[in-house]
Every structure is written in structure tokens, then in C-alpha cells.
Amino acid sequence: MASVYTTEKSNKDFRVAIVGGGMTGLACAVGLARFGIHCDIFEAAPKFDEVGAGVGLGPNALRALEGLGLLDAVLANTDEAQKAARRMLYISGIGDHEQVYDYETCSTFTDADRGIGIFRPAFLSAVLPLLPDPKVTHFNKRCTSISASSAAYSIHFADGSTHEADLVIGADGIRSTTRAAVVGDKKVLKFTNTSAYRGLVPLQTLIDEGIKTDMSKRVLNFVGIDKHIISFPIRSGQIINVVAFATDNSVPVGSVEVNGPWVQPASQQELLDRYEGWGPDVMIILKQLKTPNKWYIHTLAPLETFVKGKVALIGDAAHGMVPHLGSGAGQGFEDVYVLCQLLGHPATNISNLEDVLKAYDAVRQPRANMVLSESLRSGVICESFGLPGYGMDDMEGHLANIWDPIWRHDLDGDVLSALVRLGWSS
Image 1 (cartoon, helix red, strand yellow):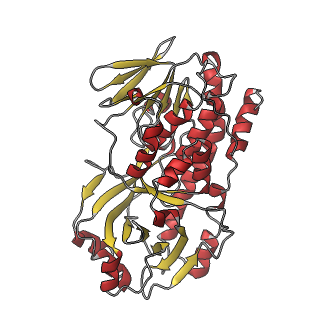
Image 2 (spheres, helix red, strand yellow):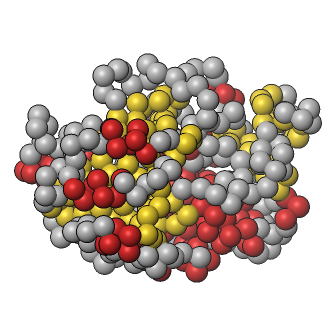
Image 3 (cartoon, helix red, strand yellow):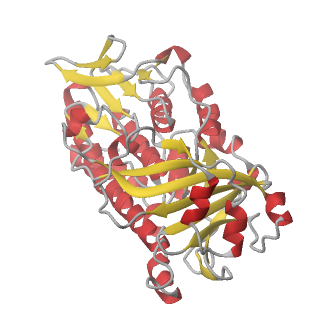
């Protein structure tokens, strides 16, 4: 992927603030720094969080990280088992766990379609040393609102302080407060009626308990009705990460609001009750999740725009999506790549920032919202196998090449389209 980064001091005449110091926000800060663009990062937490779930990064995400100059550092912090992870194998969650569909052998998968899994703490460890100056990050800064004047934007924080910037980049996640500066008070956040029970299990324990499915090499997806389970090996293949999804389809999506934390402890009995009647290997796995955490899975209704004025949303703040295609983080990195290329362009200055952001929005909004919608559809497919749902042939028809439009996307083509829209050359 082409890169036009410079280590020379920028001549940009605008001030940038990034609200949110997660994976997408930090990647954006590093990407801007490579153009010599200074920015301040405002993170609500007292420090960078050292806990977090694993995320999948497909070929498109890795290309974006490569263009941002982050890929080598990320790969160096990636577990070898996750670095070598192969494409998803779908298995029946009931009965004798027969193979339903193998994405690696039944699609147009090639060796070039490599992807990895990485845990958030490992990503942060890779990226933090690349920040040009630790002083650009400000902790305990929870954004409460953004106000605009004729000259700049004021970011207001819970501690009573404010910060002025010419450009505000909202990277504060699916529960974003910066999003209100773009969409107003429109309700766009929805609980999907899906809960995810997460836990880690030693591979040897599963073997000792008599599991027949080989858990040690592949990303597995046990599919069924209203439920599915994702597993993948970590820590050199010795630990199996398990995420068990269960959906209540008796009520419409968006009709239930989650009061309290989105991550809560759950009892093992609750988990076993939800999977009653599933196959023997599934029950072996779930019986080893003694103290699972229960995650309430939310999504955004597709936003009509990711920008307003000189405020731009990236990552989950713009298109928070369900994890069923493992593409949410990758879409955030695509946002960052396109936005950094445009902001770093020699013609970009404070007088045309709004036009630049509109060009960013023109290429990123339809692309990311497509992936958001496809992720929801993938979850429905995974939880529709078996009577009265899909059979084997149905599953193959729905799953064949489902990742192709996500993985095989021309990011540099997006940048070029945005530049053409602006009337600029590359």
C-alpha cells in the first residue's frame, strides 16, 4: 500500500483533538504524527486499560495498519497461534458436531487473505511506543459535550475543564459522547438482544474431559438456532478463548434497554441452561467456564453521516457493529487510514477542512455501514442452522465468500476517490 508520510515538521495551520484513547484513537494519533500533524488525545480512563477482549483483523485491516506504519509493531506483539490462525470452520452445535461449512476450502480463500487475532492490551503495547510524545495524552478526561464557536470547537470534560481545537475526531467508542455533535439527540444505539458469555479454557483440560473436536488450530464456529459459539486458540495454542452467543428473538431489536454495566459476571448455570440440548463437545466446553463474563452486545443504527462541520467520527463511534464478522476494528483502521491520508495531503488546511471531512465521509460512510449490516446478517445466519432453520445447502449459499467484499477492498482507491471529489491530485 502506498504511503506519503513525512517526518518533517508539518506546516498545517489547524489544531487536532482526538477524543478516545482506544485502538482506533491511538492508531489515528500515530498516523497523523507520521505527517507531522500534532494532536492531543483525551482519554476518560486514568490510564490505558490493560484488559479487553480479543479482536480479529482481516487482510483489509492489516493493509490499513501497514499503510499507517503500525503493522510490524503489531505483528511483533501478536501471539504466534493467533498470527497463524486460519479461516473459520463452521460446525453443528448439536448432535455429533458434523462439519457444516469450511470457509478455507469452500471459498476463494488464498494465502494472501491472511488475518490475525490480537488482544487489546497487546495492541496498545505495540502502538504506545510509537506516539511522538507521551504528553499528548491526557487522562481522566471524560468528554461530556462539544460546543462550536465561529473560530473553533470547545470540548467540555466532566472535571469542568475545556480544550479548544479546530478539528475534533471522535474515537470514543460505541457509547460515544462526541457522536451527539454529529447526529444530535437522535437515538442510534440499540441492544441486539444478544448476550455473549466469554471465558478461557486450557486445551489440555478439554482433552482430558474427552472432547473429540480439534480445538487447537482453527477458529471454530458452533452454529445452531438462536445461539452460536466462537472458539480460537491463544497463547501458543494452549488456551482456548470461548465466546458463546445467545439471542432472545422473542422481542424486537432495540426494544430492550440494558440498565447497568454492559459487562457483568454470570453464573455457569445460566450459561448451561441457555445451551440445554446442545451436543456433547459444546457441553464439555461450557462446563469448564466456571465464572463466565456476560457481555450485552449492542450496535448502531447506520448513521447518515460521520461528520458535521469540523467534527469527524471514526471507529465504533461512527459504526459500532456486532462482532459476527470480526470486522469492527478493521473498519476503524480503514477510517484512520483514509482520514490521515486526506488530512496529511499538502493541500489540506484550516480553510478547507470541512470539504476534506465531507470527502472522507463520502467514501467511508457507505463502506462501513455495509460491513455493519453484513455483520448483523452473519449473526442471523450463524443462529439459523437446524430445524426449523437452514440446512447444509442453505448455509453454504449464505456463507460462501461472505468476507470477500470486506477483505478485498481497495483502500487506496477510496483515497483517490476522495481526492477526485476534492479536485486534488494524489
